[in-house]
Image (cartoon, rainbow over all chains, first blue to last red; front, side):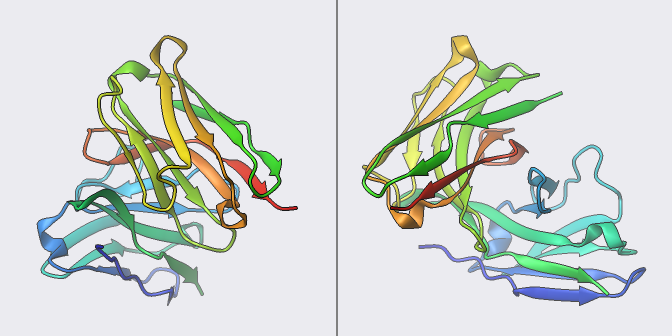
Amino acid sequence: SYVLTQPPSVSVAPGMTARLSCGGMNIGTKSVNWYQLKPGQAPLVVISKNVDRPSGIPERFSGSNSGNTATLIISRVEAGDEADYYCQVWHSSGDHRVVFGGGTKLTVL
Amino acid sequence: EVQLVESGGGLVKPGGSLRLSCAASGFTFRSYSMNWVRQPPGKGLEWLSSISSSTTFIYYAVSVKGRFTISRDNAKNSLYLQMNSLRAEDTAIYYCVRDRSGDYELDSWGQGTLVTVSS
């Protein structure tokens, strides 16, 4: 089965840049989506298809994907960015599956 | 505005059944594939099942295959998840999720409904 690996936690000071990684075998050949989860709120897609930013998502959010690592980049981090972030791919091999990473808790110091 | 509203969660005993519903509005429901995703307490997201717009293609995660059944009623703009033989590990928030483009870009999520399996 395909596995996506995310660091459990990342901490960053306000105004700095956060880089959240998502590792997977040849993930650079796949389309990666990123989701933000805050307590009591519906999950929100912040990056789709590796680099696309949905309407309403600040330009501070961007993505990259190459080789074995996809990365969500949050520039000029704000307190309101504190949340859990999950990467996700569609891996169609054997069982038809949607795979999520384990999630990263972003803490704004 | 896209709205997805789940209902049907609650407390159920191990081995019991529950049927979740999701009422969709603000978009042409019959044109989109839909999914169920869950999040156990303190844990990460887990995709459970997907159904194509015309119900031609249905897929399940290994963890629920044979126990859960996804269905939809396009005339009622509704998505369903029939859950049988429930286990303690099925305790989670269950989300109804729209697939924007047919390749699992999950662009709209409901607020979720809590299912608790406990004796």
